[in-house]
Structure formats: structure tokens, C-alpha cells
Image (cartoon, rainbow, N blue to C red):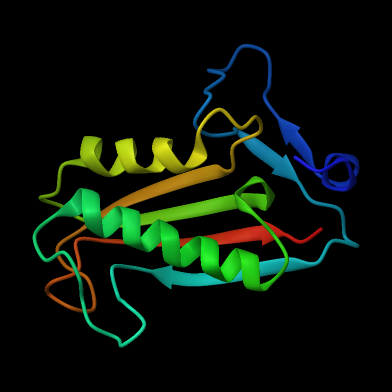
Length: 138
């Protein structure tokens, strides 16, 4: 994580609570921070076509790639994420989606907070997963 961000954002991991390498329990963002709110990203290519129908791992990989493109366009990276929300169809294999996240996140410290929701369906019946996020810009 860039030093500039380390000075501004405080990751809260209280004693007596589970300390996960995958998510933070809380994050304090200073009032002066610029925050990027990223709309739900899914498995849509640059033409608006739904890709990888029926394959949650590949849909997650493309959703994460799209998320990273938004971060990069704003001058940020994954390490700037402070909040992610994962919305997935109730019938998907969460393990396959999680494995794709770990490929992208790697061993970075200070993971974002995470909320995961299982739903009956998403905006398009071919969507299996959607990922929205918030990041503090450098």
C-alpha cells in the first residue's frame, strides 16, 4: 500500500476478534479523503456482451478485471480498496469466486471490508456475480 494512503486510512482489527487475511473488521477514512465509488461490475465485455455464461470463476475473473480498470482510470489500485460488496446468485459455488479473488488480491496487507449477499437473481439472468467497491484515492 502506498505510504500516502497508509497515513490517511486506519485499518481496525480489534483484539478478541478474528483477524482475517481476506477482510478487515473496520476501516477509518479521514474526512479529507477522496473516495471512488465503483458501480457493480460483472462479466460484461467492452461491447456490453455477457461473457462466460454459467462459469462463476470466469465471470468473477472478468468482473475483477473490470473493477481494476475503473480503479486504474481513477489513478488507484486494488490496495486502495476499503469496501467491497459481492452480490451473487444463491446457487453459485462461492469457493470458485473466492479463488479468483485470491488470485487477484494475492498477499497484499490490509484487505478491504467485505459484504457478501446471495440473491435469487441479478439484473441479467446470465449474471452469476456482481462486485461493487469503494476505494480511497491516492
